[in-house]
Length: 439
Image (cartoon, rainbow, N blue to C red; front, side, top):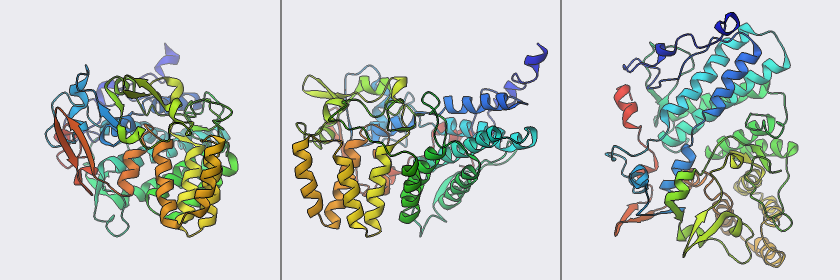
């Protein structure tokens, strides 16, 4: 009992409060008072384990899915599917605002307390670096769910999300600007870069951040900010560590599995079993593939009558946050934006060689070499749509690029998300607004 008393939960109820002075509107399970490296690692493992499935939920808002109107869990997702955000049915699942702040709570414990309690070691640096990286990822996801898409000219005034860097239950939390949150995200990644010392994580522990995972996160952050050179620089640092692609001609396997040679960070379940039960792949999504020559189609989809179910997610072995495919497609996009069209074409040719039949690739290689910049940009984004189907990229790619109109049909009625619709930014969940009037 004496050993346990050192670090078991000391004030479970102290944080589970509901006033407007809450830690935002968050109710963590409890707070531990760790003393050793092992105990701090347990705190961070708790944070990793609790990382929410919001990317799976975001797919419901995209052009990737079609709903089964007779599904058992219809009420949980229907209002998300038709973008009824202002007054949804009470049973509608909320986007995981509080869950992301719970992750931030755990990382704050490590960032604020571990440096003064632990002796200097490479393991200590790795641990604290991972905490900074995970906090950066949580804030990056928060701002891309609940803040406007990044715009350099308006980010200083665009409303973002609250910033919580300390463990202070009395602080009044107000929404900061998009710029402030992005600055914090970048600051955290820079701190992480100075501390993380493992280039990769071994299979089975690759839910944890490494150098290659951190560089992958940085490349995505800068891509969303349209800081093309910084995004490309981060991609190249990641590719210098890990650049394998699965050749689907030789090995017909899902590349999203945690033990795939493409896996970089196997943290998130991006397509949950409940979604798989209720949704089919949309005709728009399946129609974007050339079914006879695109080797991804039979891996990603299984026929269900005249429609198709998505096979990517659901199992724990299919967790995926970053993989090398993203690095290649980001490198192609950023190279093109930097007017390096030859590099962009070379990168895309290297990528598609691993995704299509030999005959199709021969034609694609010729087509890519003949593309002008506009056509190549369209092709890159189309490949992102095909490659990352139901992996949580689509909603964010739409936000940062075209914000195109989408039509969802339900119960004989068409519902429309119009071009540049304000609903491309999700409103705070009602429980967050009730618990924190400052939002």
